[in-house]
Image (cartoon, rainbow, N blue to C red):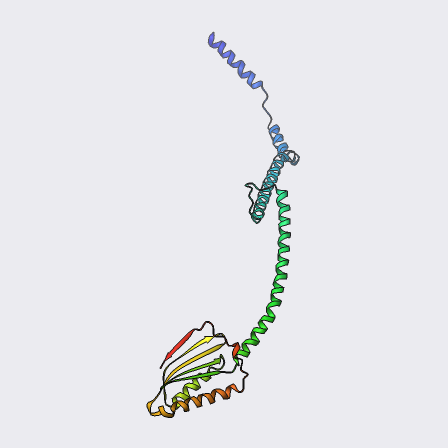
Length: 246
């Protein structure tokens, strides 16, 4: 009996399950078609796209603010040093930048005016200096001869463009049979001072000194007659001698 009852229950359950309606395949297909319909997708899309757009805007705004902070920081570093530890508000920084730029423009204008005035003063001075140098270069030479027994000390002062005179004096001394012990020169401003120490040989001692002196004076006087003499303008400060040994 228990087995029959149980079999009867089982049969009853099977019948009930068989009597249930199975879902039609068309219902699943319809649902999928509705989900894939363009209108359904358009209705679902706005929520995701709106959130992504907001995120992009936030990122752009954040980058813009960071860039502005960097620019203001660079601008603030160009100002003169302040005693305050904290920087002023941004509007105050902008006003300060404007005022600072205006002050720099004013300083630049003043410096340009000062430069022009200094350039105007420098022109006549340079012209005067050039004329003085050209005059001193063509100044008449001076010759001084000292006789100390058989020894001679010859001092020649000439301009920078009359260096050939020194070589001519050396040539004359050699022609007259005078031995040159030493020779030196010093640059003094726009002039050159030559000093020659020479020794007259014993064979020419009786008349050699007078002959040498006369010949050297004639050589220098011929040049001096062509040039105006201005001895008070000669400058002998800061002599830097160089010596030649013979």
